[in-house]
Image (cartoon, rainbow, N blue to C red; front, side, top):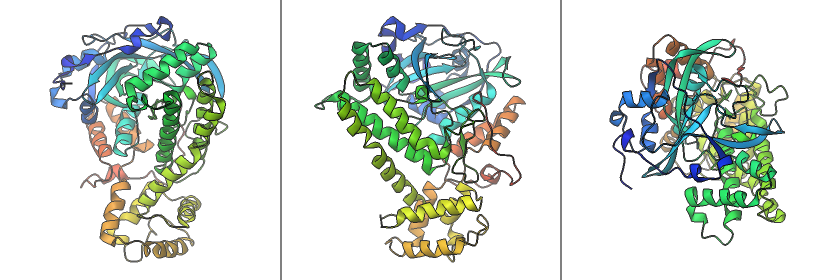
Length: 486
């Protein structure tokens, strides 16, 4: 397929619009007044086969404001259901976003999805709008996760609108043009299962295979192979979340991607001080979606998905596939954490060493990412002094065990430290830094947004003069506490 040269040259094959009519509602975006682009993502543009300089900013503004679609787009709101905080909700669907079209690129199909597009039949008394705060947070989250090599949706651009929106306070309205290989969720399958629509359930599974996992089509049991793919990718995704201290905070089944992408950023947070039970969503009073609960919640969600597939796959086979989740997650997590500690080989006792390191960080209230980075810096080779980050009498004993473990490695210090720095980021999407970017944008200054976006896209590369963007919050800062509108 030829590469696109502009937004106008994108071609669309809108498969979802050819599904049965109750799979979606056709809805046109609500145009917003006085829309102004804040930033365009080079990485997002690349996913469409474009360069930022290829993009006509006026044309993109017209698209992201809802004023004018691209030729070939067929906007619609998808219908699905899901379990929210463990309770099934049949009344779900795209309530403030629209699938504008499915672009065919040289890298495969890419959904263009407009968040803040206005009310839909699934808005449930909501206004269908988005605020600047949540839009910038999602925009930066896509950049940060991509920079950390964590599968995710991403955005092409974010814009501020001239109209105000009421949430906890009156805030500037915004729109976000989100990109994803697919927006198919666990909740799509739950909806069809609850409706006892077995033929459509199989049709959706085969759509995912044909469109996104064609290598599975030739398996002896393609539907089983797809479920195995979902389980494996979800396990690997959660391993990356845990290894990099990311808390999604609203792991409802309708927020789980069938392709194993991080989907729907709300009150998420990256760790500052390590807290194993960090729960940034202030409405999650039970801690259901706390950091240390995420692996178990993901398995619960996969089990719900498996239940939805029982009309098509034998229950015993579903159980066998689900049983692969835990060992897949543990193996992926161990590889990631050994990499962050500079351990190239696998040795007995590595799990204990990692667990002790995390207990040390938590008991000393040390910053999660700065502590890993300190282990990676050249100035800690002699003596491995981490006292600037970790104040604990247990540090020396852990370091002694760590030194003995490094003696079992064949790499020299220089090579090892370079490898560690590549996987131990300096620049993390910390909540207090995101808030600074948001406040600047509200005042009309988009330079911090562009700067932070660029740093997050290559988070391990030190940039002179950018020290402020690697700072942890002060020790006296209140704990992270966000709402679902964040």
